[in-house]
Structures are given as C-alpha cells and as structure tokens.
Length: 402
Ligand SMILES: Cc1cc2nc3c(=O)[nH]c(=O)nc-3n(C[C@H](O)[C@H](O)[C@H](O)COP(=O)(O)OP(=O)(O)OC[C@H]3O[C@@H](n4cnc5c(N)ncnc54)[C@H](O)[C@@H]3O)c2cc1C
Image 1: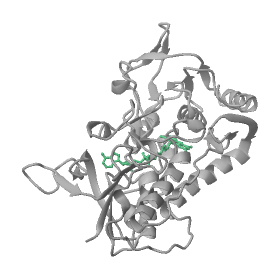
Image 2: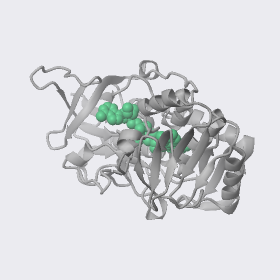
Image 3: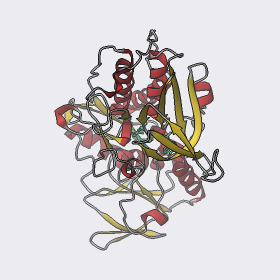
C-alpha cells in the first residue's frame, strides 16, 4: 500500500516540497499529489513586473513535473479535515469535480503538506476591497496592468504601504510610466528598517524617479478617486495599489489545526504541525520560529529552506533516516527599484539590517539573478544534486512525537 502524500499549493514552497519528496522517496512506496488552482507556476516575486506590462516566462507545471512521479491535480482546495485526514477540492473553475450531489471531491491523505501561501491584506480599511488594486496574485497584477495601460499622462497612482512590496511596486510603476504621478504612502519612514546607506540610496532613487513620498501616513479609507489619511487629508488617486502585507487563506483556521492569530499553522523546527503530526506547513501559511526566536517573515527567502526542511523531515521519518535540521537564516533583503536600480541590504541571521549594502545597476542584476534562481530552484528542488530514492519503512514513524 502506497503512502499518500498530498501537497496543497504549488507556489515556491509547495512545488519545491513535492519535487524534493519525489526525489527522496521510492516511487513504488509513495503517491505524491500536488494540488494547485492554476496550471502554471506563478513567480509571485515578479507580480509588480507583470502589472507594469512586462511578460513573464510561462512555466507550465505539466512540463516542470513531467517524469518526476508527482501527480498534478488542477483543483481548488475548499477545506481540510484533519481528523478524517481528507482534503476537499472543487475543479479550478469552482464547479464540482466528481460527485454531482456534493459538487466536490474528497482526497484522502496519510501525510499533508499545507502550502497555500497568502493573498493581499486589505486590513478591512473601508473602500480598499472595492477600489484598490493588489499585486499579491497573478489575477490582481493582470487587473492592475490593464488599468495602468488605460491611464493618461499626469494621472496619479498611489501605492499604499512602504514595505518591500510597496517599494518595488512604486519604483517599477514610476520607471515604466514616467508620465504618471506616482505617490507612496507609508505608515513609517521611507525604508526605516534599512541601514543609513540603504535609506539614503532609497531616497536618491525615489527622488530621481519623481515619486512623492508621504511618510508616517496611515491610509484610513479608499474611494474611487482618492485615498483618505488618518488626519483627514485626501490624496487624489486615479489608481490605488494596496501593498500593506499579506493575509493567509482562511482554510487552515477552519480546521482543528493549531493556528496563530493570523491563521498560520503553528509548526515545529521540522515544519510539522504542533497539533497534528501528519500535517506539515510551509511558506506564508506557516508560523515557524527562525533565528533569534522570531517568527519567519512571509518570504521566499525563508520559505525555500523551510520547504527543503519539511520534505527532508517527511522523507526521514518515513524511511527511518536521520532527521535533518536545516538552518534557516536570512542573508540579505533584495529590493528591485525598477529594472535598472536595486538595493541589496545585508542583514543579520534574524533579518536586522547591517551597514553593508549593494546598490545601483549591480544590485539590479543581483536581484534579477535571485529571482531567476528562485524559479530554477522550484524546478530543481534538490539543487541539481544526485539523490538516492529511499524505501519507505512499513509502519514508519509518522506518528512519533514532534
Ligand atoms: C510583488 C511581490 C514581490 C515579492 N518579492 C519577494 C522577494 O523579493 N523576496 C522574497 O523572499 N519574497 C518576496 N515576495 C513574497 C513571496 O512571493 C512569498 O512569500 C512566497 O510566494 C510564498 O510562497 P508560498 O509557497 O508560501 O505561497 P505562494 O507562492 O503564494 O503559492 C501558493 C500557491 O497555492 C495556490 N493556491 C492558493 N489557494 C489555493 C486553493 N484554495 N486551492 C488550490 N491552490 C491554491 C496558489 O495558486 C499558489 O500556486 C514577494 C511577493 C510579492 C507579491
């Protein structure tokens, strides 16, 4: 009898975990199913590029997983029952897959890897859901792309949120459309977590691109043609782009899994759920502790090693091997500032800025390499190193205490 592993979500982390498990485990012993709502791998880290009219390389999963032994299931996950160990899916268009009565299909699992990622977080600010655009997803980025293309010279785009995504979005739009007025509204100071050199570089690039920055500004309302700030100021906005962080999908919260306040599944150092040992969670959907006992930030930077860790831990537990403990740490924050500029801010293991930065054209090239290697790493989940597929030990230690 094969051990059934279901991986939910084929973003950076789910796709890596599924591919790596397939390289680690003997094909006769496991059935690995990867469930995803879309047929192509989405390079989420490039959504600001997609929104500004750049075309991204298509990456169909049918090619990526051909011959790997991973079965790709194109479907939308609607629920997980961790007591019955089943996942409910409907087809990717929302219609029922198999049973006409229920309109849904149940997939049973022995081990579940939950990697459904996150979407945008409108933070319940009035008007944001109705009027703002988002770039956390491909449909969102395509909607913004279409809207930006229709904007005329001199119209204003307000990017709300001064985090990494907001910085990348504002500079990308300003560079691609110098005829528009681009405004950034940031709750804190511009790049206030960066080193002095990093902040200085950011100001220089924002100035050169003509981006107006409203610092220490909280947007409390979004209307069709403006945003309103906490002190009652109205900033005209033909388009508002909302980038104030990500929110995880509500599916995990609706299960018996232990989750944190944000709905992320709480996991141990092997990415295994602390409440349900046959469930693993990785990427944006997981709450894992990193260096300095700080929760890992939603990022590919920490999600990728977390996916390696989960796959290797599952493989070790199933084959009676030694549990790996991949160190997960940060090295740098790589920020694109348009296509020709960038900022690489070096950080401590727990993600605090140090003095060193890389800027300019070299930083842009570095960031491009990072994005390329992130996508390469999805298609090459063992980093291209040869591996030996191991046999699953009957009655293996899936239930051993974490
Ligand atoms: C514009 C932008 C720039 C970024 N830049 C960086 C960066 O420079 N560096 C960095 O480290 N991070 C960056 N990030 C963050 C990074 O993209 C995420 O942290 C990362 O994608 C998380 O990986 P994941 O596998 O958890 O989720 P995702 O990559 O979001 O993948 C989730 C997958 O699950 C699928 N899915 C979701 N719901 C369902 C469902 N109900 N049924 C079936 N399938 C479903 C989705 O289609 C998707 O394929 C950026 C994000 C954005 C939006």
